Amino acid sequence: MAGSEIVKLPKELRIERRLRDAARSSALSWLPLALLAPLAFMAEAIPAAIGILLVVGFTLREFRGGHGNLLPHLELADSGSLDEAIVSIADMAKRERNWQRKTFLVGVLSNLELRAGNDETALALARETLRHQARVQPVLQRSLRANLAMILTLSGHHEEAMQELPEAPTPDPVTDGSRLIVWARDGRWREVADYKHRRLPQMEGLRHTNRVMALLKAAALEKVGGGALKMQRYLDEARPRLADEYNYLSKNWPELAAFLDSHPELREARSMLQRA
Image 1 (cartoon, rainbow, N blue to C red):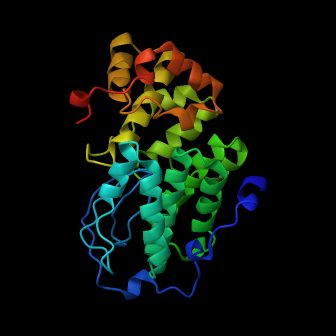
Image 2: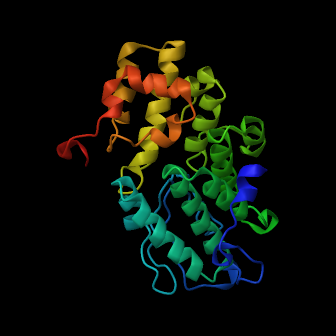
């Protein structure tokens, strides 16, 4: 595809088979937490990437090699310092020698590049995470496929996005955020309105995904009807932390842009007291 072929990734961000398998390393321990774009920590002991998210988020107790906790870097993105977050996480991904963790970090990076408006780079990175998908743990693979589907649909490739979106659309913190975006961008507003998504923990670095899901639920309820009070609750949850928070979603999506314009509070940053 043109978008993913134009961008040539640095070799340090290529995911090669010769990297060590995660199963062979016991130095990393994960804190179980159901998550962004889509993260989950499952029995496989492999974190699944949200994306970005939605970007999605996670709690990491120990990252082998002294790479540190990833949540502060996601909080940088949530507070508007996307470029700084991208540089930090790209550096972590380039230095990572564990195959599964490198795949995970590149997935996170693709989501942040999308939010920064770098669609072609985001798509190239998302495709890279699935280049050896036969070897990716099931939960991580489901998350990465959902992330790719989201990036594809926001780039205008709706048919391919639907093919990549994981099946079995039951409430799933690994894929919910991406699923709602893909469905909404495809005009499937009734499905968005009816879907019982799982809200992520209100932790630093994770709140953006919750706001996006609330935004899409509010837009869906306006389309199909569902009660003014319910819609207002979602509108309140969707109030952005930053004025341009949803620009990456709406820039090639006139329908969503019109919805944002019809609700000025969705184009205005929260006050400092509301940002917690």
